[in-house]
Image (cartoon, rainbow over all chains, first blue to last red; front, side, top):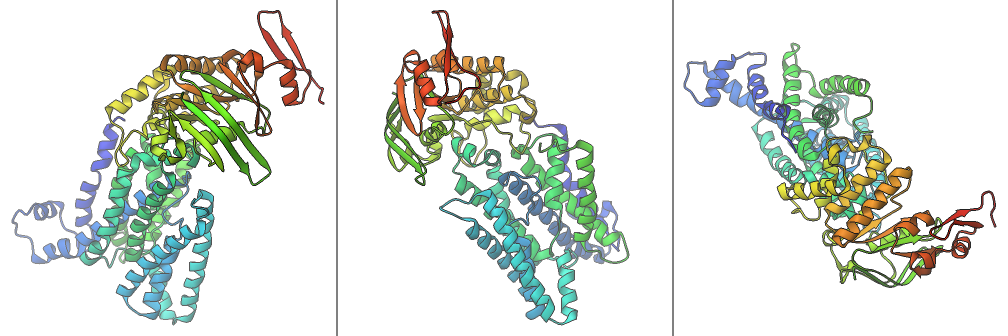
Amino acid sequence: MRVRPLSIALALLPLPVFIVSLCIGSYPIPPATVIQMLLGIPGDWPRVEWAIVFRLRMPRVIMAALGGIALSVSGASLQSTFRNPLVDSYILGVSAGAAFGAALGLGILSSMAAAQVLAFCMGLLAFTLTYAAARTRGETPVVSLVLAGIIITALFSAALSTVKFFVDPHKTAEIVYWLMGSFSCAGWDDVAWCMLPVGTGFVLLYLLRWRMNALSMGDEEAKALGVDVHRLRFLVLVASTLMASAIVSTVGIIGWVGLIVPHSVRMALRTPDNRIVIPLSACVGAAYLMIADDFARAATGYELPVGILTTLSGAPFFLYLLRRKGVRVWS
Amino acid sequence: MVLRIRGLRFSYGGAFTLEVDHLRVREGEILVLLGPNGSGKTTLLKCINALIRPESGKVEIAGRDIFSLRRRDLARLVGYLPQGHVPSFPFRVEDMVLLGRVAHVDPLSAPDRSDYEIAWSAMRAVGIEDFADRPYTELSGGERQLVLLARALAQEPRLLLLDEPTNHLDFRNQALVMGIVRKVAREKGIGAVMTLHDPNMALRVADRVALMSRGRLMREGRPQDVITPQTVSEVYGVEVERVGDGNGMYIFPALGVST
């Protein structure tokens, strides 16, 4: 495995993006000031600028980076596990479960905190149901997992619609806005809430990165190569679900990141090797969502939901990749 | 003895039963399983690799009962060459062969320099080091078989299982793959069990042949004793002609005739 200059450039990408993101907003702050603040060098900036950088922008930017890491790495891992490059973090019903949980919290309990906890739990519950439904005779075939994911997603979507139907229209609007995904309310407590599940999931998937290559050969070959397929797949699914659920419960549903980022990494570096794809998806994903969120808060006079931006940019970009290189990236 | 099978019995829900009372393979020996489609060749291979679990019977590889081994330990004893298929992602040849090291690398880590060395010596053994950088998905059928063979060798197995390794290969590539299998079996003392469709190829490469039909071993022994016009005709249900001049012998189906 060779380390190319491009890999190093992509690995370092999040750092400048992080600094620039701290400068951008309705109250622009010069990069020099931000760098001074970050390095702890005393300066004569107004007190309010310090508060904007550390209290408002930094948690939000870190949240965007965490979201990018979680969605990209879980997307890449699930694509390997399902041997399908069109799979994303939501295939096992996580987003539908989380959306229902959030709707319960917002619509019935009228509490953001309750929405977050319920969304996280329902995301995990949806995965558990999908996994249990797919399990037959101690095995969990890929096809069964995909079908079970579709069924569980449908069930939770219906439950979500039920909640939206019965609560008053004002709350329905709140739920709909939540579903679009946004970092505008993210604070340090949200970062703390996501750190453990995202961190745990990432460490696990990073450690398993090479074995995932074997898993993408198919069950029988992976077994013949010496992989305990059932256990490895379970670990990958749990780690991916933990990451995605934590992010969705905090910032809503942000689509296409888990699809676009691993794909771009595979194409740019011309390899599907997860030893490269997993760490670089984390870096590129972090940078991508930080940039998307910069646009969300600075492109127009008011906050755009970042989920709309990622879909608006992701879908055409995907189309471009498809037309430019054909289907060769996954044969 | 690399492989020893006793009293093996496996059935697919009553419709088909595989029964093998006794079968052995020595170090460096090539056993060819020959028989018509559906005679149980692949099923037997999968039993030997614990990919399916028989109802009864014993399979021992290098003296160890395979059904009590962990997947990882079994993969250090048995290299498996599956019937070729194209994976979803275009892994480079080197990365494909490196996967042969999965059973040797610590579960939570990645291959190190010694694993690369072993993968490279496996690639050299089958002569594919020149296309280490090419995507596996862009190779021809013959080249792919060689990559899978190198991957199986990188497992450093005592026994190789090959499921129709000559399928879809042209005349030259069939000879190439068979030649390499025979060479590594001889040089490294690896036992090999492979399924083939062509009786003549079996005559050329096998040390011993097991002729299978409807889940049973009809005959087993030296190729020239097992493969005769009579046995082939009986097992495949087709008239055959023998073509030869005393030094060699070839068997061909009589065209357009079935019994």
